[in-house]
Length: 351
Ligand SMILES: [Zn+2]
Image (cartoon, rainbow, N blue to C red):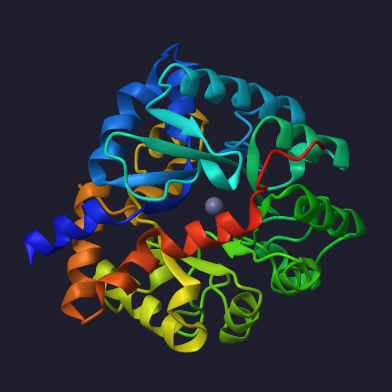
């Protein structure tokens, strides 16, 4: 079994479909540089991860490093992160076109897809969508949990609000440019509006199944069918709050996976967030979060795990349940890679 796990890890393109940079930003705020090299590169390539989608900025105060204006905050973090990536080139490179995606694993190499987790930094102006595209953004999370100018987030459920006129214009322009839309964190009507408005597949990069565990961050079977009908992918997340506590977490995650496979098909599910980014707690402390909130996040993030161990456990659990190596490859990276290859431009579009 251990030999099978390692052989699969080495022969499959693995995509980690959602990552935050809070912990790196916290280190930057303390004056540290070279943090991608020091804290990410070896850890991620050693785990066998080939492609990493990174939310460089987004809607929340943490995503904006406390900046007053979202656009300014996002641009500052973008500058920080691009400089960090330049310092680790060519081992790390940015995915701007389909051709930049790896065909096969390349040990020691990491491809980064740059993302915004929420459209507040666009400041209601399509010009800034194009500017972020020029800066390499290829995934746009439409919202975080609250309302922004594009769409309502899932914590706005009482209002029944979905996509705004500006949000619809963003969907169309993102389709034209080759930016993948991410509907994690979105309200239920917003989910339906975005999937219906988009000419391209969309992803929910970190969420689970509501039929398995009823939480507003998870999606219903109807949502999953709609997503699959457009060719999209649900990326599952390893956070006990969204899994339900009836199982040990890996078994719980696999229960969500099996349900999504049944409802939407194996082509439309991935495991994208293995809950390993627990260093972000330092950022929450730095940002002055109340103790109870930090304690809650600490309690939810599984301890003593890293990407390498977690991926190994997941692969072993899927092998034990009789999944074929081809299907495990789809779940670990093949499906998200397919959607990126479909949506991203073949050559850089002149915005
Ligand atoms: Zn998120």
